[in-house]
Image (cartoon, rainbow, N blue to C red; front, side, top):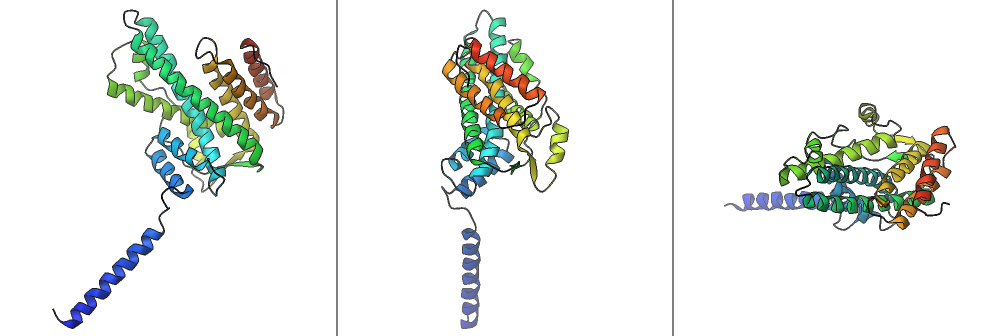
Length: 281
């Protein structure tokens, strides 16, 4: 090979290395908030909302450039996951009642699912508490896309309630579908469009989606109230946790203008607390 071609080859190689290094320098550093934000987005787009939630929680352990956006996103995910787990638990409880000969597998799933739902409810309560304390903007920024999933109940849910045979792979798919449904419904509520996924989807066609803060907080309070049911005496029987979740729901309602709907929700929450024999605020 001539000296001329050696020189050209070395120049091309050097340029390739330079381009490669420039490209890699734009990637988020592993372990950084930007890295977790990117990972959360990837998991979310894949429909893995449990993984997305885990990545967002890693962002929320510190105050950084992504914290405010991550908190709002995680509140929607937490509320949706809490509902998804709870609804699937109720379906398995119905299946246990039907299958009197072998209810144990259903009851085991009920316990596991309700524990997961309870964890998400407490996580949502924590998110609401910090959101009220730290976010003073008049509108709530939804810095994420419309989620994968459907607001309709998955067809396989009926098989569980009727105690019909469902393979493990199908059960896993059903759980994923129920969690996705919960998140879709949570987002519909958070944007002021309960159960109207088409209208909610249209909002996310804009470059930036914002909703009025009272709308978002009312939805969060409603989610907390519904999620608190898992802590009642007929389920997990954890009145102290029911109080935590209910207290944050009432705090959220105090931060929004009083309406007929907010008054009705306050009444429901207080009645639930009274029934659980815990004091209100």
